[in-house]
Amino acid sequence: MPKKIIAVFGGSFNPPINSHILLSKQIIEKCKMIEKLIFVPVSTKYQKLELESDEHRYNMLKLICENEDKLEVSDIELRQDKQLYTIQTLDLLKKEYKQEYDICFIMGTDNLKELETWNDSERLLRDYKIIVLERDNDILEDIIINNDILNKNREALIKIEGIDRIHLSSSFIRDKIQNGENIEKYVPKKVLEYIKNNKLYM
Image 1 (cartoon, rainbow, N blue to C red):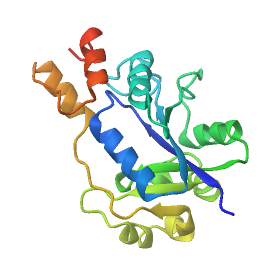
Image 2 (image 1 turned 90 degrees about the horizontal axis):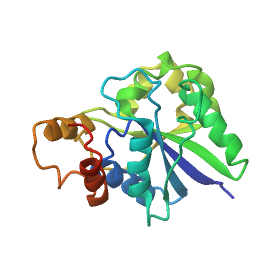
Image 3 (image 1 turned 120 degrees about the vertical axis):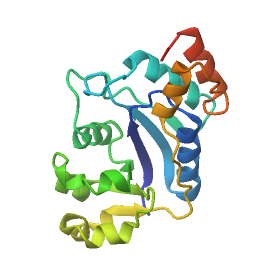
Image 4 (image 1 turned 60 degrees about the vertical axis):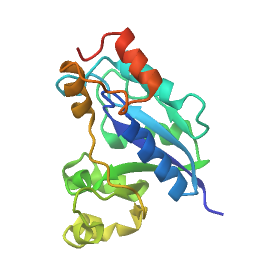
């Protein structure tokens, strides 16, 4: 009998927005083997400009996951002394969940095209599976055919059909906040209240 899947959704979530929730729920709905989807925010040790504090981004994700049976957030990267490579994060999660689940990493085709530059990318494909989301005009099969590592490990790649291609980004939301514009339709109500109460991104 196939194992249940834990899907790992990594990112900055700066801030988390409706699109993150919509995308997550679509993935869960389309892939019935997913037992839970875990948001894994990167820590501020990751050298990215305008990254809000670990605490605030984690708290906003917790608000999103409240009352959602299959959505969780992990602070596994936030607790480390240094920024982890994706393979290290997955190894830690695998150890945490023992042998009960298969760990799958969610990745867009934009990142998949650069995967061979990632740390230990071949082992990542060998030991884990990747749920691939096609971005823009990308076609997964074309990317696989033109990449030796992906072609050799194509069984590790899971394409879920029928996922909406979402173009909205957190940076778009940050710009709107800085311009004093209303973001009510782009973020969950609890996240909006948290952003206002803590005067984030202003």
